[in-house]
Image (cartoon, rainbow, N blue to C red; front, side, top):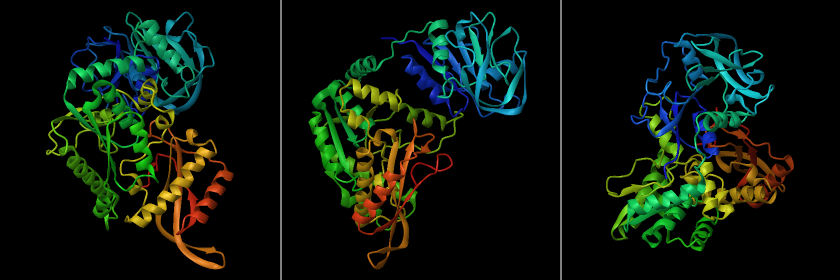
Length: 511
């Protein structure tokens, strides 16, 4: 089935992925491409959205897209930088704003009988984020909406299906943002709303069967949401030709290897559990540098996985749980405008000796969509609701060198914290939580004796995608009980602290 598609041109805004997600929440398929790598065949796209940007249209480094095959030929919505670009280079005027227009604002004027602002009322809250402002509309520009401080908050261009806004409809703070996108995409551009989890499952299963045929596929399971949903999709498509390997790197949560393995077997998956704890701990011996630890864990995993894959005969494909943000960020690294923070373990990076073709059933969808697809496939909600857990596991939550004793200590601390969140009904209000074992000993008193033992830091954040995150204001009573339980029950720990840093500037993990 051919879906109507939206092309989103990325000018480097931190919100670009959010635009794509909001469009998909309307059950419309969207794709992000760098502004300077516009697809050659535009026939498959029924509408185009220009993203915001940290750049200024007035600067020497202004980003210039080639809109010759888009403008006037396809419905186009220009957001923030896009709106200023259209004004600045098409007969309008953009100037520095007297005050940096950032944060909440309210619409003070809305053009009546304008389909673009249908069902949006005066006073509706929008989110501004720019230091320039449009002083004069471009040629044939018609004012559609204003705020008290920004006269040209929204406009359209007469004679074209082109609309522009100086605020961000994709962020949560723009209360009618979704309505505005629906007005443009459905009401004006006429796109069909047929991109659903059900249609994704049906089409992906058919595509896997066509691509893989009767070949055997091997998949490394992690216990996380992405690899689990990928496994169930592949299992639906090819059944017993899927071979799953679940490696215990010795850095998983307490009892996780056996409990997750049992859960997978209950789902009818063909899974082999491999306990390689000692191999990983040996590879990590004496390493303190975080990057060296990551590499040692990554290399050991590839070696173990390769050993196991070689025991299978005639395997032609390697399946991976790559999701769309991994793909976008890897593309950005090669010339797109968005800055890349880290290289992704799922995209590329396979050793030459694993001569397998790759199948990635989730590479077109975001994390929240993966969960929706999982629900459609009937996967246990508890498994789908699991917090993200880093690939290197507790290896990057133990600061400094890693020993079996430290791993066991942190597993106990982590279990008390995570089980406590579940018991208090707080687990689902948190996006990710964990404990860090610090390379710090501090003085304490237990009974009548002085102690000199370890300090652990608890971390709980709320986020939608991990790109930005705020610390969670957990109840004092919960923190007090958790701290008491950890200190009383985990030998070697005498101090507990709670991390109240947001991302940025801090990262979610400590290493």
